[in-house]
Length: 88
Image: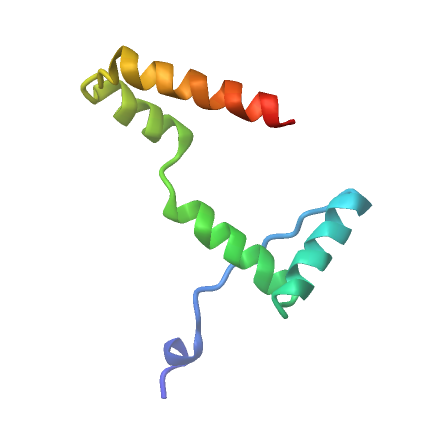
């Protein structure tokens, strides 16, 4: 078999000086999902790559037509906020 059949395109990324608090939170969240930190971070990267970049999202937003939600919708939102504040 040619050697190319055994070669897989995989890159390595190393992140140095990760604050202990962040590392512990990664470990905790990975553990909740029964995942290794490596698999958890790889999943985070995959999910991030599935989203448009901030610049692409803003470009798309600028190109879209404005939406008029009208005063009644805005008033409904304000009323909802007032009711929530009163429950606290």
